[in-house]
Image (cartoon, rainbow over all chains, first blue to last red):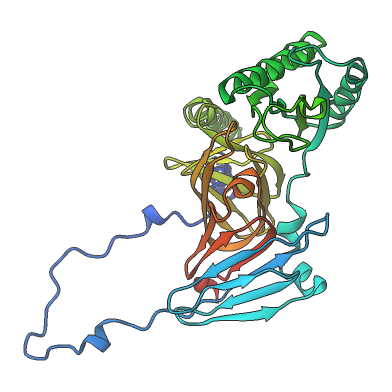
Length: 233
Length: 162
């Protein structure tokens, strides 16, 4: 029966503290607040009071992007010059203050050390474009067909989340285009909801003329930029 | 027989208490989506999210916001998608703090700060970095990484386990 009691207790603890197996810093015993005897006659050397910082072992590795771009990361560490990593598998090791050094990895060693984190990256969002008639929030006939593909993508994901982002061409003021782009995004949201999409998984945003698909001079009409981007993730 | 009944009753009581605790903690900690910076998209093994001292399992769909601490166990990993399309994932035995997330979905201006206390982290930068390079920073106990649009991984060995 003692065994059953013990099992009982374990079950209770598991239920109550689902995640309590990690160290809770706040529950660590506080250092005693009683005054400690101080040896006044023998002042302690400052070097003896401040222990050397514990050696660290940290590393950073730049990965190639699926599309081949590299980009860059600047590593700053106390007591060292900043180090720019801008080639695939360029890395840095930090052993503590003043101990920043460049190291190079390859695909295999990076996978060995970081594989589990890399494999858990969420899948990249899928992007769709719907185009609009000039100055209106009505879809072009071709884009009507694209809506079906958006739904197929949404249905293929276990727990989808949708962002609808409106864009305009460069004709008109910033304010006018911010409003028009949001109106277009809102129009698509309504359309998708009327076709059965749950309103709770959709967010809208208007980017105005900030992100033209085809950059043009001010006040140039560009049908390719009058669009709504749908990101399914 | 009597003892067996007591055992069954205790299990019931504790089970009920556990469910009650989970229900009470839920809406307070995770009910509001207002401040959400992102969402858990991948959850393997043991993973937890701590907000204002409360810990909840980091399940798929759990919102993530600034000040949250994401923790994983020995077999755990958690992948998060943020509103600017940044992706972060923590490998096993990791502790990741979301220090700051600010993102304007119209201008794409923002700031994104995270700290890896221990473990491993994979990062794919998003729209914030595209708009303003180095507006995303990843801190470790000994370094700060300024992100200029890229994918990279970071590892912090926990000195306590060395």
